Image (tube, rainbow, N blue to C red; front, top):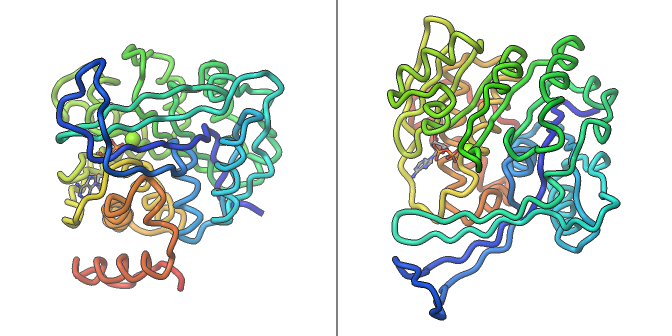
Length: 320
Ligand SMILES: Nc1ncnc2c1ncn2[C@@H]1O[C@H](COP(=O)(O)OP(=O)(O)O)[C@@H](O)[C@H]1O
Ligand SMILES: [Mg+2]
């Protein structure tokens, strides 16, 4: 039995570290380090939520190439149920993201591959209904599935599941209004600040969260190393993540989502959910990629427990 069903994309990330500040054309530019690791918002969320201690299953689509297989193996090794990851019959490859951190920023180049091809008929609705919670990552990357995402969420709500959504970026920068049809069925919405502003077509973060709070029960706005904000109706909480040494911030937002939903499903207060999410996300930035910090559960548990105590919070609730 799975507790959380994740519908979304599954691919690897190729990260090149130590590139020069500027990336001129036609030059041989050297990187000093490399990570080849599990990528994609939905898969990072599924992996890290599972390591925290939730039973997770992923519905996704890969190609017939070795990269898709490696991604599935990485998820299975963490305990995620990958029985509903389908291999497409077309010649399309599994997606891949190349991340180029340089100076204070990063380039992210994504080949969407099979993530553009997953469609509603690939989803086993009985499997979804068997879970307690549905999460979808990367709304704008599901080109074939997108028109049916409202339907998917509506059916999950009718079956009594709670739901969460993280749109991530819209590569087309259009931020279509069809998102609102999904938000009707979303219990926890988890955009970062830029996304929240783009979706609500404002440049003011507090206006963005006010508007989103009219559409969704719980809105959580992530703000990098700044304070994340949780808003539910008229109540709101704002909490800064612990400061840490940064390897890279790939997957920080997805790990934040995993921490939030882990606590949410354990019936914790929204303030506890926010605190726990911040600590989990801060830990993820201390190691490469989105999941490397979540491969050693003992170390993770130690960090989470120490930070929880430092924040002066009572009853730590992650199982040994
Ligand atoms: N430099 C950092 N130090 C500590 N925590 C961070 C840092 N960057 C991100 N985080 C944590 O990760 C969360 C998500 O980061 P953010 O970059 O806003 O989202 P996304 O990855 O979706 O763009 C933040 O709210 C925070 O909890
Ligand atoms: Mg994100």
